Image 1 (cartoon, rainbow, N blue to C red):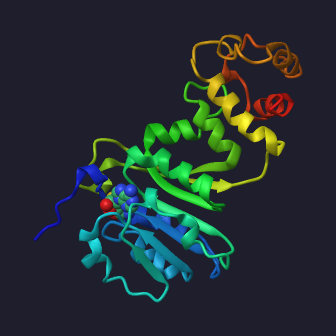
Image 2 (image 1 turned 60 degrees about the horizontal axis):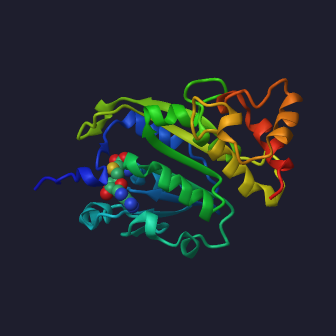
Length: 260
Ligand code: SAH
C-alpha cells in the first residue's frame, strides 16, 4: 500500500540524491555533538545523517512513518514521535553535547515558529533548513533591498546566513507548488548589545519596520526621536530615512542608547 501524503503536514519527500548529498555534506559535527532532525519523513536525510558518527535525535509528528523509519539501524539514533513545536527541547539536549546542529525539510508554514523555538530555547551552532525560495531571500536580504525586513535583521543579528543550494520543486514527491532554497544559519557573536537592551533592540526593529513605506519618524512616534536622530547623524542618516536603509550595526547603536 502506498503512503498517503498529508498536505497539512507538508509531506513533500525529497527524492533527489544530488540535493540530499549537498545538505548532508554541509553538516560537519564532531562525535560529541548532537544533530536534531525535524520531520524525518521517510528518512531521506536521516539514512545519511546516521553516518555522521554523533548522536541523532529526530522529531516526527506522524506515527504512520514509524515502520519505515524503524528500518534505519544505528545505536546513536532516537526517534521521538511528537510535534517538534510542543516538545521541551531542554529535556533532550544533554549538557554533555558540545554543539547542537539542527536540520530539517519541513512544512513551510511553520518555518518561522521553528526558528523562533530553536533560537529562544537552545544555543544551536547551526541550523540547516529547506525553506521556500522567497522566504530564504528575505532571510538573507541585505540593507537597501526590497526584501530587507525585520526578520532579516533579527536573524542576521544572531546568525551568519548562507545559501547551500537551490532546490527545484521537481526534487520532491509529491511536487509542491513552490521552489525552495536550503540555507544554513551559523550562530555568531559578532554584535555587541547590552543585555538589558536586547529586548529593546527586538522591539525597535519590529516598530521600525511596522509600516515599510513610512519613515522612522512616523514608525517610531513613541520613541525619543531627537536621540535617535542624533545617533543616525554619525552615519549620515536621519529619522527621515526608512528602516530598510538602516543597518544592523546602526539599529544596535540606537538600541544601546535607548533607556529600557
Ligand atoms: N525530511 C523528509 C520529509 C520532509 S516532509 C524529506 O526530506 O524527505 C516534512 C516532514 O515533517 C513530514 O514527515 C511531516 O510529517 C513532518 N512534520 C510536519 N510537522 C511537524 C512537526 N510539527 N513536528 C515534527 N514533524 C513534523
